[in-house]
Amino acid sequence: MRSGSVVGLAVMMGMGFVSTVRGAEPKQGDALRADLGGGVILETVYIPPGDFLMGSTPEEKKWATGIEGGAQAGTERESYEGEKPRPMSVKYGFWMGRTEVTNGQFKKFVEATGYVSDAEKPGGKTQCFNPEWKSYNLTTQVTHPWEPMEGKSWRDPNFQFPLRDDFPVVCVSWTDGREFAKWLTKSEQAAGRLPKGLEYRLPTEAEWEYACRGGSKEANYFWWGNELSEGEGRFNISAVDFLPDRKQKWPLSSAPWSDGFSFVSPVDHYGERGRNGFGIADMCGGVWEVILDHFDPKGGHEELYTVKEGVRPVCRGGNYFDVPGNARCAVRLGLQGPHYSDSRDGFRVCLGPARDHK
Image 1 (tube, rainbow, N blue to C red):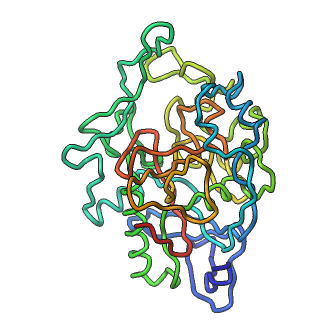
Image 2 (image 1 turned 180 degrees about the vertical axis):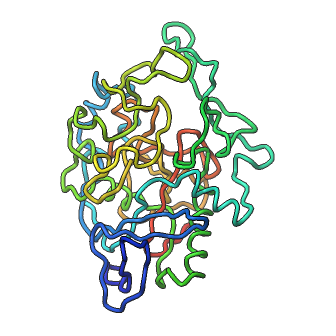
Image 3 (image 1 turned 90 degrees about the horizontal axis):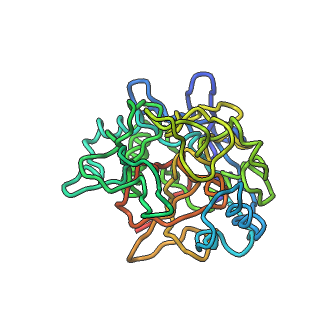
């Protein structure tokens, strides 16, 4: 389905109002606002059909595992990006969330439905930061800062500071993200604001990387180009920021500036400088974004890739804890399963043609 199938969306930007006008075509950058109630909105931005390159070059992989990129050398994770960039196409227009879904937005979903997230269910766990952690102790016994914890969830990710409604929601699973999107679809349909044939859902890998690259036809490391130094003031990753109540930053490689946050930052905190060519914020860094596709270690796909058993959803984009080499446009990992959650993981929704995923 091409962008012409999205006929009828005219967006009155100043009012956040959407009306149906036969023959009206959305334009790149038009914003659509879903009303979640209580003054909480979710904004998506229109992205027209287009071509892009998925994946990374050998040179990019070498940079990512080098002194500036800081990703661990000698592992296979960079191979998940494919041997070299592949030309791909998104043949229809769609709308991508301006930001990751926030705590405030997810809260409205829970209040409206009584939904219980995977981490909150009996026996549920989620990966959280252990505040007793001091260091990796790389020369003796390696210890990692994240551990599976009971009693923690999106309501309490075990951060050592108060949650804010404008933080991206974390400790939510692939299943949780899909349920949020289903609710949003039904809610907007009932209000008469959703054109036939479109649904809110998690983005496919092709949609996500196309949106992340911001319209660039090049396989750049980041959406702004290849220079890490040009990322200052654009995204939240491991940088020169003290951990809560300490005089210590994240160890290992980090960006050589302060981004203002040692952990998660509010969505769209960096404003226009943090938005790419499509006007999308926080596509690199912030929190990992869970994708609709199943993880194929050989590389991403142009069409939705699914399996019948052993689903391992893809996550994209890196997070606030990651070294620069792990927060590039091409980076992709597979989660343990559809119910896995982590205080570094969240999600972003898109509005586009319906996609089946059993």
